[in-house]
Length: 426
Ligand SMILES: [Zn+2]
Image (cartoon, rainbow, N blue to C red; front, side, top):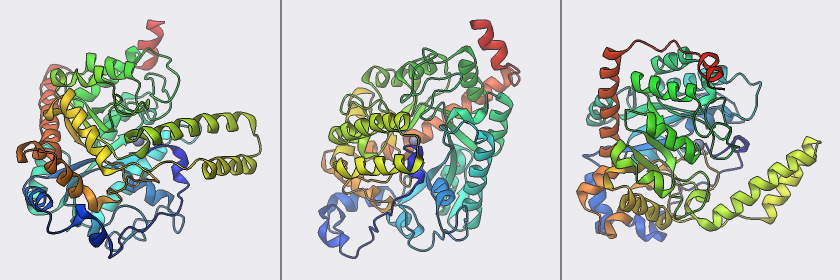
């Protein structure tokens, strides 16, 4: 999820025009690059790191939170449904269970439980198409069975409410990654888009990472500050992921990953799953996005009337349209991560259904093969395309599971509290 205001969904464009196949060279069925990648995606799972369908269902106006009414067998108003998942050859999906961190009294754990409930209802509702996946072996087995292996990824460490017991229970409910922050700095970790209060992670923040390693929950560094990325890499014994980020060297947006961090991935074994968020993959879009954030902050501080505030924000958006990003720019970020970190350290993390705007050529989940075809035309080998699609993520998950089984033999669940660890540090 890009940010909380996206919950106020603007109308989505419908992208399933019958003319799409005719007008887009990338979608031509005769394209040999596309034929090649379609073939290899039949035998290697394409694993997407981030899709916000559960929040989209929660925020759907008519009716909200209704898993049955948001029928994935039909064309939906969002980016995701079964016809388009099939066209996109999606083999496994991390469904994001995002919880906004901006509203302090919403009951983060309550909303987290509700989002996990929605995700699990979605998965259970279509047993012929989806299967809950809790391990790398589950992904491999379900892909062979022709079902989309469905993993649950949590977005925002605030949902722990500073409790390692809550972390363990989320694991038991199926959560297999946690971004240490969303856009708000927590009591123990600094966010990329908020003020830095902890020089990365506090002692309790480091204990969270250790306990995630012991459980086998992936440490997700999308949304955190570079200091937090660095501190987590210092502590983590397991490979980390970035479930939806791009390269800072290409687009100077605080949500992106600097080269100094990319260079540390080979030693850690982790991956950056490159996202399609226009403001992270296009410098021109990033500049508008950063100015929009500054304006929003200023309006929130100076305009008390909420109706007036909304009018001011809408007027700003109308006067400052965001330039479109492109599929080629997403491919550029993938190639940058591949050059700096290596081809073993890159994956795909779309953020579909968490974004209002989409790159040209990557309008919804049906378009993943077009991105692989672009890389095939740029000279990527089948072997490297398979790593990008899913093999790297499977290696990371297998690695995290091996670390967890070792750590579970070495130590019991942590009994530490934030009071104990962080008060001692001050
Ligand atoms: Zn996000």
